[in-house]
Length: 470
Image 1 (tube, one colour):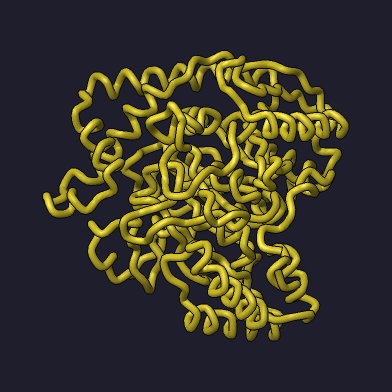
Image 2 (cartoon, rainbow, N blue to C red):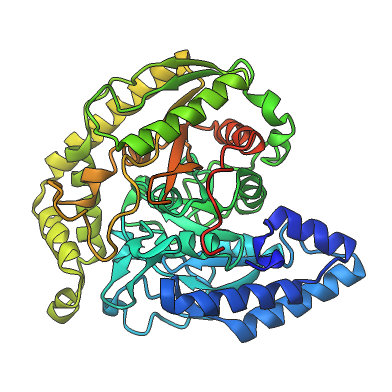
């Protein structure tokens, strides 16, 4: 990557302050990278070059006057094409939405970025309505992994992860209903945080209800903290938002590696033996956990002890999908991804009592994890038990799994409990494909998860993960 495309958002802002380069130069470099990688990776639904350069020129003027609009003024940003962005359509990966609408409103997180002066490069790919853990859709095709384009980028925020990994802007907004920022972060060698539910406001409300979170996708934890300081501000359109943040997320990183010292860390390598983990993944994660111990954390192998809640998750998830498509015509339904059609039919057949039983299991899981975090500050697991597999399929070929949840057992439970969870790049497998480590904190401990993640970055946890495109 060019020097500008290799810089983090934090480094870009520092460069704007000193006048080493301008938002226009940075935006041109990011747009060039997006165009160069689009045919190979397909991370974008659209690239808004003209508008991005206009925004960059406005930002350059503010910096020249010494009046930046906010902490990310002039930083190139991409937005998953699930979130509304004023000035263009939102397709959500589906032919069923027609022309995607005129785009006259911003989602809350997009609005906060716009107010802060961010430069919007374009919208990134998603499976239809974000329904699965890989990124391909009838409307926009298959998104590949920048490390190996014939492999999946993961999903459902796969376009955002691929854009960040490829150098097409250091910041992206993703959504996560069952792992959708963490899965592609793990596969694409970047950082992502699923915040505590309600910490980042959402509008319109997701049909998947309180499983769905908006989160930052970045190169490191420091940039994620910077982005969280912007997008966590309240928005009256989200009745479930947690309110003003009483602290700066970036400020929580000030302790550096010292922020880990004394933390009680539970390491669950395979959820008590019930999840088979690829040997290269297990080894990379174990090495990163050893690094936590070297930094002064008190690490103990301990399993949270819950049974796989996949059946209850399916009830909640499939019912949400059925709700998304409830008013569709027959022609619209026939245009959908066949897998989405299947889960919509499944969800529509489930009863209210089945749904409430799933809610009961969810509440019990939350109670169990609350008790677990009385003993441990953090839980560490692999983010994914595998690395990126063939692009264009929902499950690895030859697998016994029938749905994407079969190979994502470490991610969706923590959507059910609404806890903050991050994926930190920690190594590569024998084929050079990235491996991610997951850090899970108790509800509302987003700053703690970011601080521990930052300490790992400072200690060199990502040193073995090369840049995606050289």
